[in-house]
Image 1 (cartoon, helix red, strand yellow):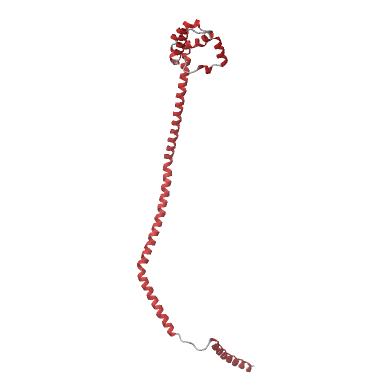
Image 2 (image 1 turned 180 degrees about the vertical axis):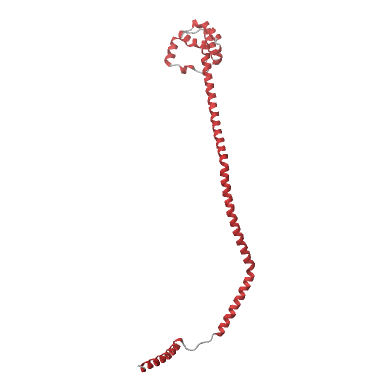
Amino acid sequence: MFSFDIRQFIDEEEEETASKAKSPIADELKTRLADIADRLNASLDSLVADCGSIRSRFQEIQDQLPEDLIDSVSPAVFLEQYKFKLERAKQRMSDRLEHKALETTIQVSRQQVNEEKTKLDALTAGPESTRQELDQLKQQESELLVQLRQCRVKISEAEKRIADLPQAIEEQKSKLKSSIKHLATLNKSLKPVPGTDAADAKAIDEVEQIRLRAILAIQNFLG
């Protein structure tokens, strides 16, 4: 009757009690009950829409069934009364899915809004930051131009020194020759002087002593 073993969902005591209460069931009754069970395997949507055929079949054999079975099956053959409850439950589940999907969409949209705002802020602040960058670049350009002019001056000076180098070399050679010639002349005019400074100083001192003695003699004579 079912695509699964329903005994696993029945307490052992209840199953044992039910087994004891069971009496032999006629084949025709078994067939009808099996048919009812098969029809109850239909979708809930179809059952809550119309259980008339199942209900009729059940009512035909109801007086042959035990009370506990009647109590269990009776609600199932009147499932139309649960149509609104089932539809509301399914609608709420559908609404929840839609709500969840909408929340996801809102989250994505919110993130997109934040990203767009970030881009707008960047664009709004862009001119100022770009101007600052431009000013810095112009300052660097000015400094580089100064360095370039200084470098060009040094290049010109170096090129001039290189161009003037042969003449400077010749002039320096001429100066060197003149210095050598002058040195040779000086060497030729250098004559050796006899005696020593000590001997000459002694001679000078002897003359000085003569002068001093004369002065002293005159002073003594004059009293």
